[in-house]
Length: 396
Image (cartoon, rainbow, N blue to C red):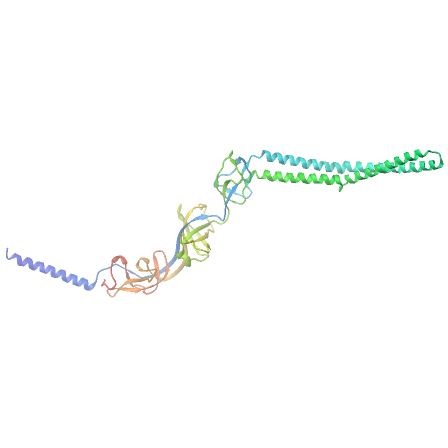
């Protein structure tokens, strides 16, 4: 038993010595750590945001007058043409008013025709007859006057002849006035023309009222919402339809203001609808708001969709990646390896068995990788932050 104790102690001392040697060698050689080499490649910088599809304009449509809907001719999702009838109100009163105005026009036109074809010729004939009667009355007056002067007739016969002459003159004046009144530019004609103009104005007013019983599309587009049914009583101005005006489909985004300096007009983008994730489509940046929304810390931008797929609809949610820069054959690293990237970027490089802090200059930032414009060379290895290695530590 006593002989075995020294052997056990010797064994333990040997193990401790081996462990000490191992730890010393390990401390000298450094901790083995995972590293990533800086390598050259292509890099695309982009801004990603979520937005929605919009149209150039969205119009709320309703009736200009109160009434009861007789019919609705469209449904949600229909493609609409400018001038198309969307709905119609019951229009009995308006139709009756238009019919009455048409009758008034016909009556005024008929009276003008009658005046021109009958009234004027009759008046002219009456004037000719009155003038002939006046001529005879003058001749008779002259004859009676001579006979009275010769003593054949009494003076009373001359008075009678004078009255006949005066009556004939009055008849000529009356016939002339009537003929002038019945002329195409006479008083009667002017009265009838005034009535005709009033009747035509009444017809235009009645037609306008009848037109207001039809709700028409102001432009081409797509009907988004329908808010009424036949038989509904509507008031003037109540919204009945929402129409998305036809035109280039657009995307509106709220982009973080920190990305504002990277955005310029006409940058290209790829958009993906949440409902169709496997079908991306192209877009182009055409508008950047002049101001920043202070409450949200964002700026509104708009993109046009040159060739929108059939599935793209107004108000659809889309994710957009706007390409802001593209570089080829540049030195890159995974962005997770760069520390203090927004202030004073640096990396922890493995150099001659030690962890060395290297200040780096960053360039274009892509998805998951960043350009190293200065501070590293291709092939140099960088220690990841998750290893926990500190600056100056031995590594291998």
